[in-house]
Amino acid sequence: MTTAPTTEALETSATTGADTRPVTRRAAEQTPTALWNDSADPRELATAIHEYGAVGATCNPVIAYTCIQQDPETWVPRIREIAAEQPTAGESWIGWKAVEELSVAAAAQLLPAFEASGGRNGRLSMQTDPRLHRDADALVEQAARFSQLAPNVIVKIPATKVGIAAIEEAAFRGVSINATVSFTVPQVVAVGEAIERALDRRAAEGLPEQEFGHVVTLMAGRFDDWLKTVVKRDHVMIDPGHLEWAGVAAVKQAYRVFRERGFRSRVLVAAFRNPLQWSEFQGGDLVVSPPFQWSKDINDNAYPFRPDAIDDEVPAHVLDALRAATPEFARGYDVDGMTIDEFDRFGATVTTLRQFLDADAKLDALVRDIIVPAA
Image (tube, rainbow, N blue to C red; front, side, top):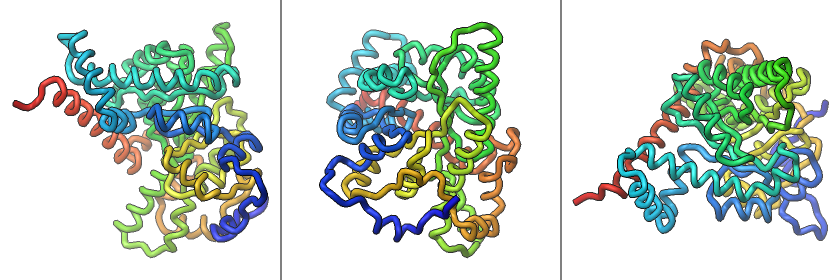
C-alpha cells in the first residue's frame, strides 16, 4: 500500500477544469463511499441531498435539541399542540414525540434514495433514549418501535456492553442498526460481530433476508478529542499534527477488519474534527457523515480527494508517535485493545454518554418552559 500524503500535498492536488459540481457530489459519483448528513434539520438536509449528494442523515439528542431550539416558529406551537393532545404526558414524553416527528419528516426527504438503493442508503438514523443505556430490553423495545415509524429508519444503540447485547437482539428482530457512542476499533468490531450473529440467527430461523443497511459508527473526532485530553492531562509532548491522524488511523484499521472478515455492515465515520476525516476515506465502501457545515466548507473550499485514498496507510512514524504518547491510542486502535467489559469506562464513552444525557435534560427543560412558562 502507498503512504497517505501530507495535508500540504492534499491541498495542492485539487482537481482542475470546468467541472463546477460540489466536490462531495463528484466524490459520491466516482467512488462507492456514501455521503450522509449529520443533521436532521430539514433545510440543511434538503441542501445536502439535492446539492451535495447526501443519501442519509442522522438525529441524536444533541441534534434534536438544537433543531427544535433553533426553529421556535415550528416547534413552540407544535409542542403546545402535543401537550394539549396528551394532557397527562410529561415533558420527556412530549419532547421525544417532537423528536419522532422531526425524524419522520427527515426520513421522508430520504425516501427516494432509500428506494433507489434498495434500502442500503436513504436511511435516517434515529437514536434510542440515552436514559435507557443500562436496560437492554428497553433499548430493544424502543428500537423496534422506532423502526416502525418509517420504512427507512435505522436505529442507533450505544456500543456499550449492554448496548451491544441490545444491538444483536434488535437486529435479529429485523431492526436496521447504527451503533453510536462508538469511538474505537474494538467497539466497532464487537458491533460488527453482533450483527453477524443476528443475521446468522435470522437465517437459521428462516426469517426473510433483506437489505437492512446496517452501519457501525466510529466517531473519529471524539477519539481524537479523548487522546488530546489525555496527553494534556499527562503532560505529554507530541507533535499536535499527529493527534489529527488518530481517528483516521482507527477508521482505516476498522475498515480493513470489516473487509477481511466479510462483515455485512458498513463502517460509518462521524464526529468530524478535520478534513482528512472526509478525504482519507474516499474510495471505500463505507459512509462518511459530516455535519452540514463541514460539507458546506468542503465544497466551498473545493477540498480535494483521491478516489483510492482509503487504501493509503497512515505514516508509520505517526502511528509510532501515537503509541509512544499514550496507551489510550493502542486501546482504541488495536482490535484487541479493549474487552467488551472495558467499553463503558473508556473516556470518550463516558464523555459522550454524559453529553447525550445532558441534551435529554435540556430538551426536558425546553419543553417545560413552553408548556409551563414562567409567571
